[in-house]
Image (tube, rainbow, N blue to C red):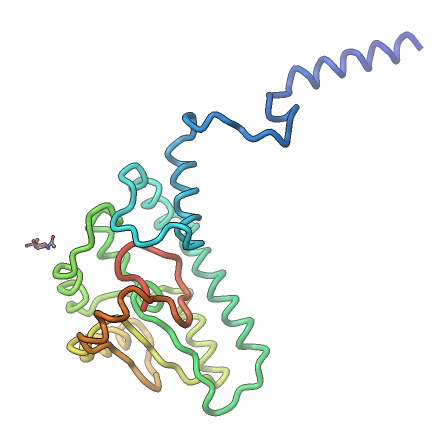
Length: 222
Ligand SMILES: *[C@@H]1O[C@H](CO)[C@@H](O)[C@H](O)[C@H]1NC(C)=O
């Protein structure tokens, strides 16, 4: 009996020794906000952007450049892209496909990656410059987002028609068609681009249809 009590006592001390304040009071939030690291703050910032609780921002916070860079070039961005594309595919797979059934993709940041542009411009810490961005688009070298390309190929195999709907303006039709083919998108029903007038109207109403891509600042969606 004596022995049992002793063991319990020692065990209690050991458990108490290992408890930090937040382990002992698991429902109490850590109130040390000043102590959040940039990594943690930037992960929160990104989540808020994805959930559209933060929107209309012009640049990413300066302290988040490194975190954004790591997000993009680490495993997370690719994984996020895979998850959203998979969900779109799972939805499509369970449908009975009719000849006119169509999948609509936006282009920049969804089927074509604009990471090479942002890589050269501070991952969004620089204010978006449409002149420079257009120059980059006009080179026609944007690579595919690999997970979207996979999903695209599967959807085409399932018999879906593809429409590309983009915030790119009509003057970019030829370069966009060439870029899509170069990146591996060989077939589509329609490529819908904006007239300049329409562009002014819709610039603030993006993501109407299917935006299978994580968000970056700038012109990343429709
Ligand atoms: C965009 O970049 C060009 C070339 O560097 C520069 O001349 C122009 O002033 C910039 N525009 C804005 C709005 O910053």
